[in-house]
Amino acid sequence: LEELGAHYEAGGAGQKAAYCFVNAGDKARARFANAQAMRYYERGLALLEGADGLAKIEVLHNLGDVYGLVGRYTSAQEAFAEMLRLAWLLDHRGKGGAAHRRLGRLHRTMGAMESAQTHLRMAIRLFRLVDDARGVAATLDDLGSLLVARGEYGAALEHHERALGLKREIGDPRAIAVSLHNLGIASDESGAFKAAQEHFAEALELRRSIGDRLGVADTLDRLAAGHRARSDYSLAREVWLEALTEAQEIGDRAQEARILLRLGESLIQLGRLEDARGRVDGAAAIATELGDQLLHIETHRTQAELALATGDLGRARAEAELAYGLVEKVQLEPQRGLALRALGEIAAAQALDASEGDGEAGAPSCASSRRGARALELFGRAADLFCALGNELELAKTYALLGNAHDRLGNVRQAHSFRQRADEVFARLAGEDSLVE
Image 1 (cartoon, one colour):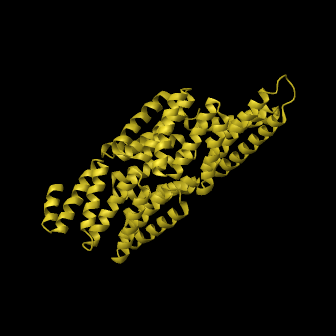
Image 2 (cartoon, helix red, strand yellow):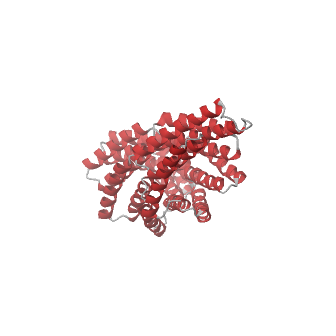
Image 3 (cartoon, helix red, strand yellow):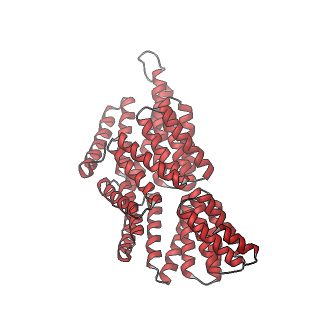
């Protein structure tokens, strides 16, 4: 196709040449030869200037997707914006909806949540005007994912369930798998672990049956997280390594970084700190390359966890503060709670470090007491957030940390109260789903 396109181009048949290059791009994209796909699409697009507007829209759609996959977010945004401009020029509402949806997903990835929501709502409006049930269902899923990121789990579940109902009516296995996966995430985040694992298992079976490698990597990542929640670290690592191989082979850089972070966290829990450092540093390099705000937050928080495990409290605090600063920009409440708790853990470690330097068994130093009080404040703020969000698993973890912090300060009654609350939540979640440590 490339050679044929070159002959057409040399012979002055630009449009025929363009279609050859576009077809070559489609074939390269299908086998995740991403660099080749981008080169072919760009070459074909240049030859379509002033020609078939609908063909240009299709190329921009596919080229933008490949840009997004490899982390070229600015280029992706430019492609989708041009796609939207052409859709309005052609008065093509369906294509306009598709462009708005792609822009909404991209802005969500980049942490621009308000802009993402605006684009996604416009997409639904346009899809409904042209009776595009597939477009409506897909955008409902995207809105659900945005709501999960904000911690609005009930509304997210409602959006994903509506999307799944529409997709089952249409009968598209690939689309059904997406909704099942998203339902799994929303269920997982809201503490319904058994339901989450069932959704993930069904999604994985569908994705494997249709050869959806992007989807397989994503769902394997979430299944591994469930194994870790059951303290089956060995199986979790095995599944994550499988997911990592998939992500690397298809060139999904953001997914690769997220899996590296999960592997790093597991290695920290196992005490294999040097191995963990290699994984986390690899994720940090990709996050910097991509400029992904949410990925940066997770990376800084994991680096803080690693530094805390190695006893480097100064580095731990600096990384946790960087994570919190980024959270303030994107305004995502679940991430805010996690960042506050990380800062609380560091303050508690600093308080313990100061108390151990007090010498003989005397009263705690002012520094120790001050840092202990700071830890209580940070844990309390995190607990309030998780309580408001209905994220019971993270709330129970925070209660346990509050109990430990009160214990170190000699507040026996408060320590017992928070530990009891944590035990009650863990027991309830374990009783319902048998997935919590």
